[in-house]
Amino acid sequence: MPPWNPITGHLYFCYKITARLPKDAHPNYLPHLVRRELPELGPNFYLDTWPFGPQILVVASTKTLYQISQEHSLPKHPGLRYFLYPIAEGLDLVTMEGHLWKTWRSRFNPGFSASYLMTLARGIVDETEQFCRRLQELAEGQKLFRMKDLTDNLTVDIIGRVVMNAQLGSQVHRNPLVDGLRMQVKWCTFGADNNPFKRYNPLRPLVHWYNSRRMNNYVTRVIESRFAELMSADCGSEIANNSIIDLVLTAYLPAKASKDLPQLDTTFKRFTVNQIKLFLFSGHDTTSSTVCYIFYILATKLRVSAQIRAEHDAVFGKNLSRTASLITATPHLLNQLPYTVAVIKEVLRMFPAVSGTRIGEPGFEVVDEAGQHFPTQDLLIWDVVQGIQRDPIYWKNPDEFIPERWLVAPGHPLHPVKGAYRPFSHGPRNCIGQELAMMEMKVILVLTARQFDVVIGYTDLDEAKKKKEIRTVNGERGYQVQRAQPQGDLPCYVTKS
Image (cartoon, rainbow, N blue to C red; front, top):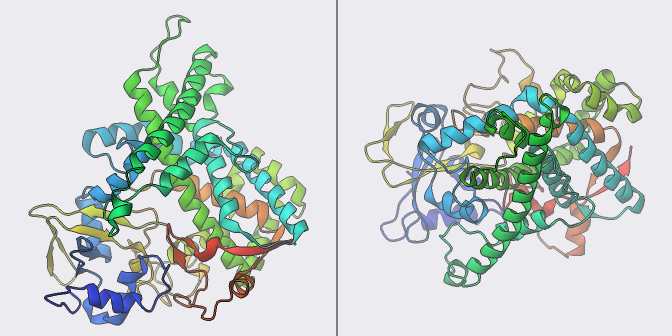
């Protein structure tokens, strides 16, 4: 482990590392920088942050990550459950365990399959066209804006459409479900805040109750409405294939012997409402950040932008007005975009939207490539995606954006090492929404990359704020902050191509 002090543990060492970072840089950079400071340390090591944080085991090698996620899937850390509880009441696929998790994962798996999502392409296209109209307005106004604000609204609208067949319209106007969700997230905490006034804020329970009520009422109305429509529809009609919740409800329905409308089981309804809230939160926020980084790359890597546009011309033709209808009519064209997928994967490699935290168990040890054993009991196990995806052990030129590494054959120096690419995790508890996220990003790129040029606005923003020192991380001005989005929510301008 790093140099340890009997009084400060690793706190002073970590302070020296983080002092090199901007104050708002994401904590996920810490293990990665520790490795670069102490390359002999190896990818797995302990961090003692007591009394300001938990005892941590950083896990960032292919072998040890396999052990905690696939060979023996460790449970999620209680801090994650604490954070998500106000959103999903502990009834969500991220934090549930055992038989309960298996039951609900199996209910939602069919709706998130690639084949079923292709049938929902129209909704994704419709919401992305609204996004394009908003970009058109901004191009005409030539004003500096924050891309994350737009992509947040776009992706939450897509999730609402795909999961619930609900047009939330947050790109156009305020929506009570979206407002409640965003306010709820702002008041969520992992329960380990150093500031006691923040940790024990007496208003938090009231705010959480109010927002939960708003969200639950909204989602319940949607589910009951979909259920009533499904029950009144003829078997095999189009209405049964409009969203993921339609698929779940159809599987739930008993065999109908009559037209009598049964009531939704209260327990089923409660679990379903909370799963949907979790999908809305985790699905839209992570994809939104990744879309921002895609625009960041296209604006700063002109060669990449040119190659993406050429691929889209080859697959969809040069008549941009027909692209949306082509995707809707033939969504499988999205599977003919190898370079576009390579760009998305490389963005996810360099700017992963999540990392994982689990809790160790008595008697369970991880064993690294050298045979060293790491006991895990009562430790926070930190699955550091940022660390392994920029580790030179696994990646050639890890800080360079090279989409071609996803296009070369096995055996090529650039070809990814098995198990080193983990933006959606691995194993049975991998991200259920990864196919949807990839499909969303392909549609967004196809409908925007040839229409608009994004110009990064950090220089103007820094001048307006009169910043004397401009700091970067790994040479990137758009380093990751907070929930892994670009610093400043990606200030930019947009122009018509």
